[in-house]
Image (cartoon, rainbow, N blue to C red; front, top):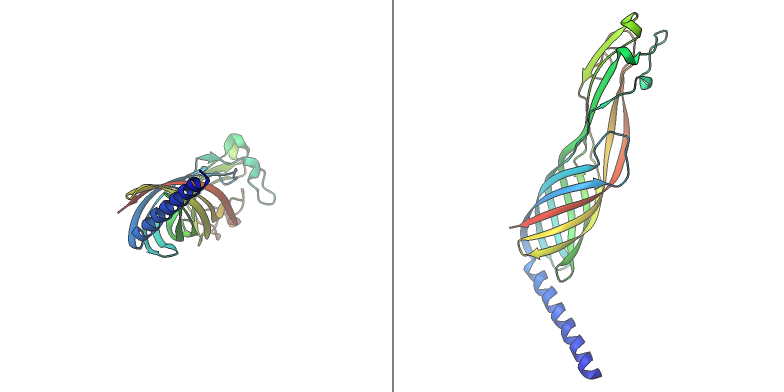
Length: 244
């Protein structure tokens, strides 16, 4: 009974190894895939961006004995919701009264998007399972829309109107790693962890200052400016793969 059990285990292992070897041989050479993705941020952010992401990519790879090397060109989009800026956060020029919320409004919307390039390596684990890892570049064009009309009580001293759509692009180095499950030769599912990086911009209006042109686009006073901050966020990403 012990001998039979041992022989059975050896046979099963040999069959599994043979199946994996055949799958790896089938994956050797040039291949192409189209991927649809959606993701969700782990944790909160203060950029008024939505937690979700959507994207797609056209992936080209070459299978070798140690795994599949791939390069993918795609697009990534992270939307944002319209929000109102609190008047208490708007500074005023020296000698000018603070903006009055009853006579002021500042509406904004932020988005993150851009073309991406993913470089990666994939390798089978067993049967239909595999792992992957790599680096994403791009997809980090931060855009802010703003429209404001602010003034003091009764607009007795000033009324500032301003609008603009500044953008900031970054290389966006984003490492990723994950696992995949192959349904058949034509399709599979993948789950990744990716740390999306970008440079956030924020337009700062200084109320009641002298009209003119500053370094910030679309502003109405000399003291207005753009502040920049490097940000990152870990996301869980799910993708469906069409292989052809």
